[in-house]
Image (cartoon, rainbow, N blue to C red; front, side, top):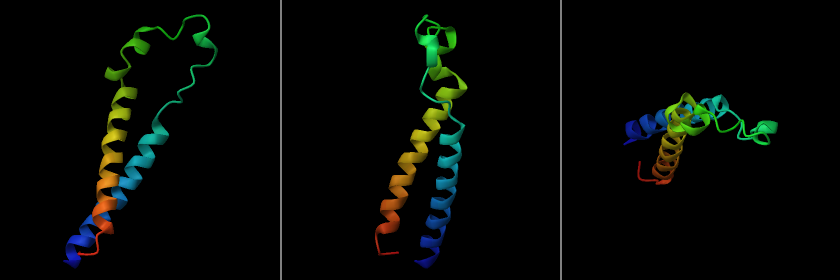
Length: 79
């Protein structure tokens, strides 16, 4: 069972690095002064889920769930 633990640990490390990169690639949530004049309601503001930013958010959620699952599995001392 040592091989399974090594494989899960390698997957965990890859997931940690991927999650860090995805979070750093995302834009900040503050819209700045553009919200005062209504500039936030642009095409990209309305369709954010279909943009690159939306893809980064979805991938971050998937990596975060995988991070939690792998951390829980690696914490079990049966491997």
